Amino acid sequence: MATMPARIIHRSIERNWRDVWAFAGAPENMPLWASGLASGLEKSGDDWIAKGVLGTVRVSFAPDNEFGVLDHTVTIANGLRVYNALRIITNGDGCEVMFTLLRLPDMTDAQFEADAAHVARDLEALKKLMEI
Image 1: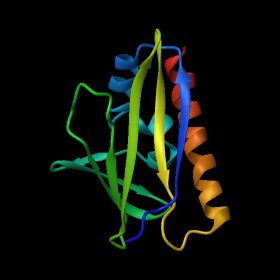
Image 2: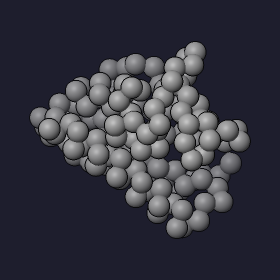
Image 3: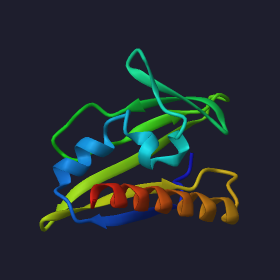
Image 4: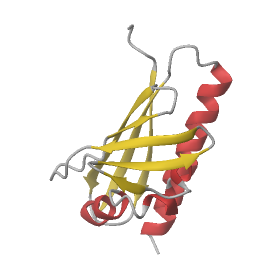
């Protein structure tokens, strides 16, 4: 497979990176800010299951770490696996939350832009929750 076009979408958050990492990385909290998982996640072995517009999806998270990595792979019912790179790094007293959006093969410009807008809304929701 050829290298896919990518876009990094980020938000600065006025909160310690560890607080944001702990909150954002808890699958129980994801429905509060990650709208694609708004139905909630149920534990299934090492993974989590969510139901949404794409049907039932399986979400596999990177192991807990001290580096601010919240990467996860979403496997859609048709077998398509989408890798999502999500990182939180320190920025002064706050942090940067960065999501690398990959443009999947056969995705139109409009679909890629809509996906990017969706991620931006989710990161904005996380920011609002963390800056209360």
